[in-house]
Image (cartoon, rainbow, N blue to C red):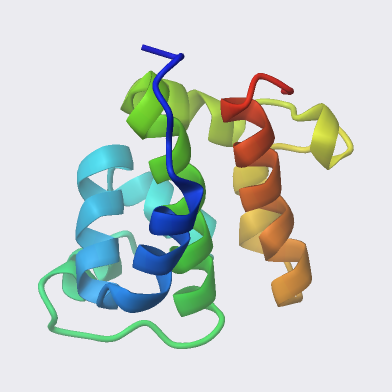
Length: 129
């Protein structure tokens, strides 16, 4: 399964063109509300359900965190499955100064910091941890 090719260009395009409700729904189904709320910096996990059901819209920077999380999770889940994507988010990552991607995504202050998570996910899928 790990040898399957993942087209990161298509996933990146989807991350920018899919509605935030679609992205929230995918992440909620793949990771669960608690994890999505954590990476987006939310105190109330139910807000993720509100986004997924189009009852509310995420505000910046949560919207950017959602899109970056979507890219990273899709890259990994498409090759290794959702369980590995969840584990990768919370594992120490040598490409991110041994920080967990979920932690960095939650506390990133700039878009450039958020983009590092997607770069690390691409490296993981390519076999370069």
